[in-house]
Each structure stands twice: as C-alpha cells, then as structure tokens.
Image (cartoon, rainbow, N blue to C red):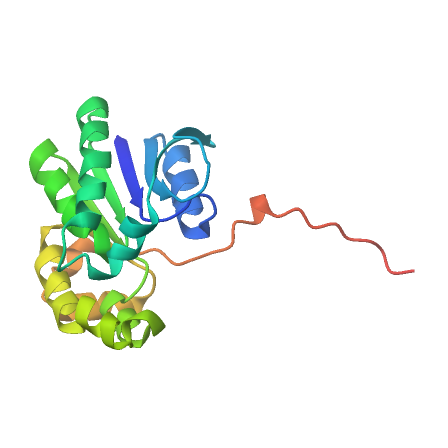
Length: 203
C-alpha cells in the first residue's frame, strides 16, 4: 500500500511519527510524509525508506492556523501543497496526524478515492481550551472551543480508521458515536534503536 502521512509541523523530529513510519515501512508499505517547514530544509528528503515532501510556510500562514476554522488561508496552503502531490503519486491511503488537518484528509479521500486514517495524538478541543494562545481575547475570537468540538464531531465519522494513543481516548471517541471497530490504540513508545547511550564501568 502507498501511504501519505500528513504532519502540520517540522519533521524530523517527532517520535510518534518516526515510529509509525518505521513500522509501516517494515511491514512493506511505501510511505510518504508531507510536512511544513519554517527553516531552510530541502523540499524532498528521505527518512529511512520513507519519502519526505516539505513546503515552506510563511509566518502569516503559520500564525493563521489558530483561526483556520474561521478563515481559509491555512487550509488553502495545505490544499495547494497536497493536491498536486496526491495527483502525481496516486496514494492508496492518507494518514492525518492529529485533528486539525482532518478536513484536508476528508477532501483528499473524496477527490482521490483514498482511505482516510485520522491519528488523534491529542484530545484537540480539550488541548485548545487550556492552551495559552487561545485564552487571550484574540485567541478566543479566532479559535472557538465549541467550533472545534463540532469540527471533530463532523470530520471523525468520515475516517475509515481512527487511531488513539490510550484506551481512555478510544472511549472518548466511541462516546462521540464512532463505531468501535474503526478505532485502534497505538501507544507512544521510545524507539530504542535510535538511542546511542555510552556507558562506562564504575571504577
């Protein structure tokens, strides 16, 4: 299977995504990952056997993510970036890393006839409710917690598979009305293969 993973921010590092890429590659899948960058990193790259696609994101577009449910700039950035890649590569599945870009994943599913996997790294509405940048007056205006709850309720049923980090998160998603058979739990673990620890005998 040819899989496109989509991550909003810089890669690497991201331990969870790194582990998923390695596991999928070892299982025989061709993995691509698309991510944004604010650094001078190459547009095309490799991570293990996976192909990395990057696009430079401006400070304005990056900052506009907080209001992405109200204004089109942020989602338009991802459409302009991802649709040509999907058209060129012909993926079988798209794997969205966390809730915000699930709308884009839904559009890719419909436009390119792919499977949609939404990997919920966080309880996004709860996270934003306590985030520092959304507790200001401007933050509350741009990022309504009620709107994110509704966004999650609408987009999750469109997924063919949903991944959560812990059982409690799985239970929460089930309570949103999602078929339990669509949900898998993949816990965060340390990749010991990537560690280089030098030890010395105690004298």
